[in-house]
Image (cartoon, rainbow, N blue to C red):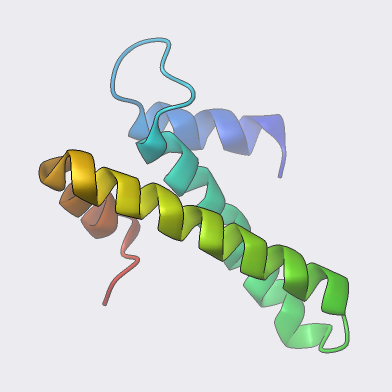
Length: 87
């Protein structure tokens, strides 16, 4: 993922000016990377190291979403809706 993609994702999800590391932004970046890696793994079925990385990213995103759910339900629901993670 390029720095341009990362900066545009952060700009869309930041809470305030200068925000680069909030849970919302981290979840958005991880979601973008997860989607990209999922597409890759559809063609490269035997790429097990990337599959392990995908599993690690999904679990990290899950932990961040759990944190948001515990601390601020409104932000949690907003992130879920904006990124369309839950169907």
